[in-house]
Image 1 (cartoon, helix red, strand yellow):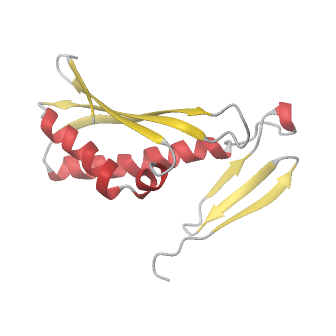
Image 2: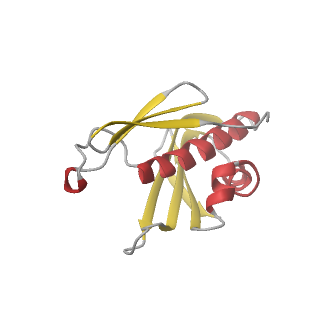
Length: 152
């Protein structure tokens, strides 16, 4: 299987786990002290948001570079609301792309975010089947600080 990805999650101690994946990188997961952990690593649900942010971020910056936009800074801010009942899944996730640069075209930024959200990012495609995803963008002019915001 050419597209196969594997991961291994191994108990360290308490509620802490060491996770490795196909890439060979390691991340530690843990819970907070209130549920038996020692706050030594990321919560699994945090990693879901981070994975979505990385996935869409890589798409958007790649597309903007191909569009020859002069990006000087880029950040993806994610906020997730979870249900109060177990299994406490995400019910809403807001993804805000904050793009800083010189002479950035709003149409280009909007299109890059749209392509990621609707075509290229597998994390977005998968999560959108179960969670309401809201995609926003904020364009900051590096020279003046002027901002333009929008939503898909």
